[in-house]
Image (cartoon, rainbow, N blue to C red; front, side, top):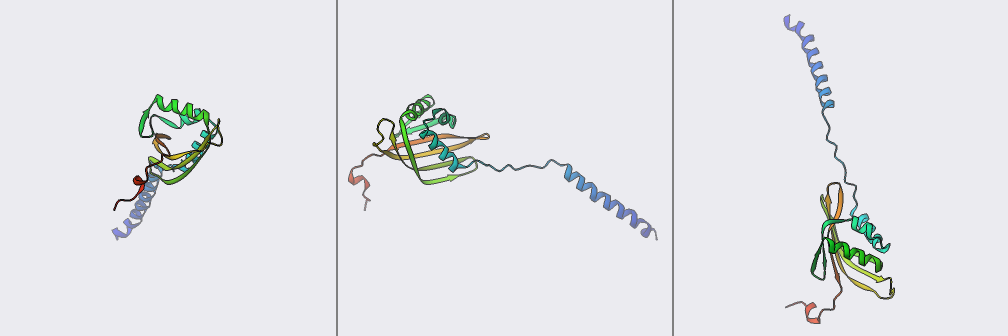
Length: 164
């Protein structure tokens, strides 16, 4: 008989306990996962458009302060990268890029391919070569950490033949 009298009390305690757990769960700070909205393809398109607009300010803003630029295998850092952007942006015209490989991870993105462009002084002169651009997440921003620009070079015929 005592058990029957305790049943409603135990049920009430169970219900109150369950409600208390829900309140505690609601009161806990929920971790909000923010989806990374940065689009590597859009960033590369903007980068190319900035070159075509001769916008050296935007190009420098997209480039990390410690970025490395390789031109024909020679590394350039810091002030050399800014100087190259300033000088190149003023004369480059109609830059077109054709990606061959690209990928994006949580904290990096890269794109490599071929490019062509003319110059403001000679629109018929077509310069071409290969490029690689590596982006890195720096806090909330993405910046270019490495650019490798290699103008096309004529290699001797034997250099391109497969070895047997």
